Image (cartoon, rainbow, N blue to C red; front, side, top):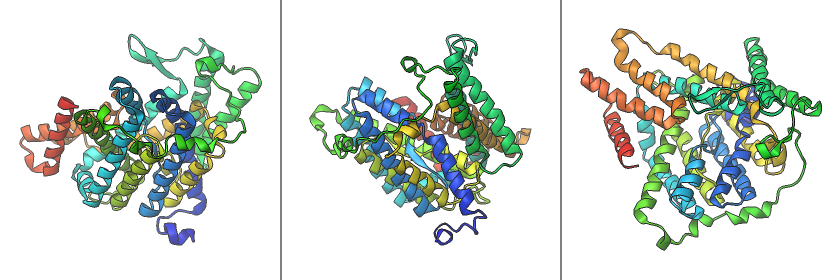
Length: 454
């Protein structure tokens, strides 16, 4: 049955490998079950309702990806987009969270229409192969940077923006977490180099178990007031009735209390960020999985984009911010995932997490950090496919700007934006206009307008 559904032999994989890859993807994404309710509760939403909505939206979107596209990509509530909704739309602009969810719902409907009309697919195909390679490299640096932050190794600094943590300060909380993450990185790297099956997954569990041992021996100290919680999971059921607090509330909006122009701006903001974050993730992960054809196109991109659009729409109705394809899918790909069985495994785990949410949310961020850092390295290795010779600078410089923008500006879409704008301008000025796809001109203009008006 699995062979018939997911074409395992055709993709040179096995059910065991795919399931392990799906578990790996889930483990690197599980933090969203704790983070998303925390962020959206700042907008006045019930955290338990958001948790349930996030689980269901992730299940629906990832299952759609499995059966519609047969790709190993997982979806959940996008980081950055949830913060934009909570702190900008509902915070600074003062919109009720119901109106913000309506904007997400409309964005999802627009995406469905765009996917049906092949607009999103045309955008994907118009991006030059060198820039697509750069997106993969940039995402590698981006998720490695996220991993360093989740590990507590990279911390804020007033003078240099970021710096290395001082291990001796607060050793029994932040210090030991950072040290365990560093040990996890080394162990995961060694396991991967020695070609252990499921090395990334072993690294996650191994780091978590080390943390539990440290807690039991008193090396790690629980300090909830400062964000250092028990690493040992608790067992209690979730209150499922809470989902009613957010379900369908995106249609319960008083339009007299919101400005139509500003509301349209909000929709387009969600639209821009989601479109290019999704495209960037699909490009990056597909490149690493060697799923692009000789022309740099993803053969199954249309159903993949449709799955993403359906997930966003369903998520808004359930009560969560934009649901999008996660860069952490690359962890499953690195573990050998090549088909929809990987994503279906992840989807099932998201559904199961509704019953055992306290267990999954107990996975500390420092335990998943090594996986993100190692996967970041694997994606960064794509940089060897980019030619940096003098006769290729019109391709290489935009690729370079794309790569550095993603981690430094903390945004996949900003990296793509700068890459596209610089590619069009540099090639146009250097007399290589024939290299520019007409859609690239349109994208460059739209990105410039976004910076001016949004």
